[in-house]
Length: 451
Image (cartoon, one colour):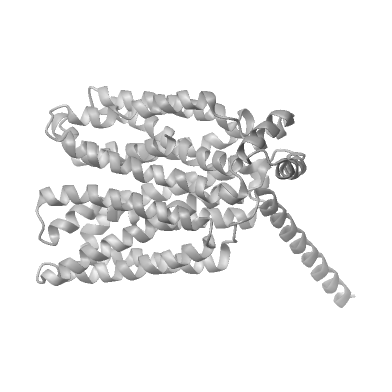
């Protein structure tokens, strides 16, 4: 439900804004503000939820997030004028940002090692499903005068379901152990691991070791030990956005019309792209438990870069050649599939896995906040950049970012597939110890040479 709300609330505005603009008499600046208000709220929600979830628990904050979603969706649907709509869109965005930071953490801490990639990836699958529902409702409600209010307000229904579901969900066993509730944590782990006592005892022992470490703050997040995780998570969060997938998705109907298809077909194509996204995301989630996460990111980056460059050529020549227009459309679909099967789900999965237990909520919040900030920057700069560079040339820049992302994964991203959260944390500590030892050895050598 959290992923569904995430996707629906970010996708529904693409159709709703066409009617909001007319009924509320919005100028271009106000239209942009209505769309980007969710992104501003998402940044606020993402950066604040983590520290609170470390303190009060993942489950309680999940309930708070559902309430924020409910208030924001209902308020957006009944807003009488521009500023009220902006306020409720910001509130809605806070729910989106909180979900993006909180839910991958919760799923990563709850899932058995063998199923963690799949469970964490299901969040991205539901984001894609939410987008698909948004496209469907946008299409179905376009003929109703108050259709945009229903488009935005219907998100209150899954928000209520999320709240009810959170009442019966278990708390994260990592959080329970940290708060001296080992027996409850053991019960949760037994349920998650099919009553395998040996696995549960091993997990409890590892969690106890990590939980004994005092809760960290900003100093620990930017410290030597966490630095590899922070660099990898922040880099993945930024590159996922600057590769341009959101702009391609928003621009998809226009690409279809440029290729010579009608407006009606272009709107329907958005729905088919949504269905295709869901299917490809399922395949990506299935692969995540079987294939190296790093290799999937690298392959996805290459496919995205190549198809973007081909799409650019097609768009440049689409007005003169039907073949070029068809090539642009096919390239766009392959590009979207490459993102949905790799960078889409894997980024959210990996940032939920990388950080040590004592700052996991803070680390995930910070990374999600960076992701939403990058999203907002890309979204706000896309229209003027499109006007300046043109529809063909602009996507070359996104293709170059895909190539840079491949280098970044090679250089800075460490593997998490098939590893427990505790073993990942231990690897970070071992790496920090090696760096400290090397620094001490280098200092001793320098002192000896000087003497």
